[in-house]
Length: 265
Ligand code: 48H
Image (cartoon, rainbow, N blue to C red):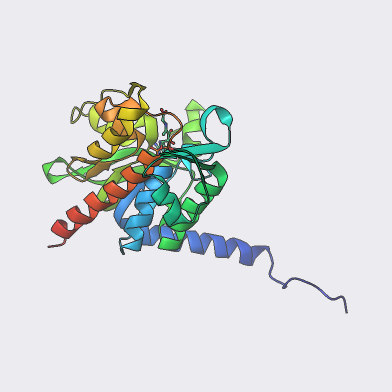
C-alpha cells in the first residue's frame, strides 16, 4: 500500500469547511459591539484594545491584506519610524527597534505590521477582507448604528452589471479608521451632517499631538481615528512616522469603552 503523508480529505470537505466557517462568523458579527472600517495601524490597534477588553469587534477591510500604510515606510523603503512615546507600543507588541536619536525610533515595517495584526487576531478581533464600506446606517437622533457593505470587486465590475445590492451590519459603535479618505465621515458629509476640511501640509512636530488630541466621537455612534482625524479637522500630516496612528487607535478604543459603559447602563 502506498504510504501517504496527508489525510484523505477531499475537495468537498475543504469547500464546506470554508463556506460554513465564513457563514458562522459573518452571521455572528452581523450584530457587533464595534465595527471598525479600515485595517491600518489605527484600526488594528483599536481592534486589539477593544477585543481584549471583551467587546465583540469586527474590522472591515477593502483589501485582501491588512496593515494599510504600516507595511512600508516612506518612499517605498521598508523602515518605519515612531517618535517617543510611540516606542512603548512597539515594546507592548514585542517589536524590536533601534533608537536613531533621542526621541526617534526605527523598526522594520513588515515585522511591526505583522506583529500588530497577529496581536489584534490574538485579542479576538474578527476580520472581513475584500469588503468595502459603502454607506452608514442611521437611526433615531441621527445616530450611526451600523454600516452598509459590499464585496470590493463589485465596485470594479463593468457598469452594466453593477446592480449588486449591498448588505448592512448593525453595531453599537462605528469607527472610521480609513486613513486619508475618511470614507465614513465623507458619507455623513454627503448628507450634510458634518464638514471635512481635508488634511493639511506636513508638520511633524505639530501633527502627531493634534491627531491624538482630536481622536474621539465626532457624531453620535461614530468615532474617528488615525489619518482620518487629520482629514476631518484639517490637521497637518506627519509623513512616515506612526506613533500617532498607534496612540490614536488606543485613545479611540478608550473613548469607545467609556461610551459603551454608558450605553449598557
Ligand atoms: C473598507 C477601507 C475603506 C473602505 C479605506 O491608510 P491607513 O494605514 O490608515 P491609518 O489612519 O490607520 O494610518 C495612516 C498611515 O498609514 C499613513 O498613511 C500616514 C501616517 N500618513 C501620513 C501622511 O502624511 O500621509 O489604513 C486605512 C485602511 C486601509 O487598509 C484601506 O484599505 C482601508 O482602511 N479602507 N476599507 N472600506 N471604504 N477605505
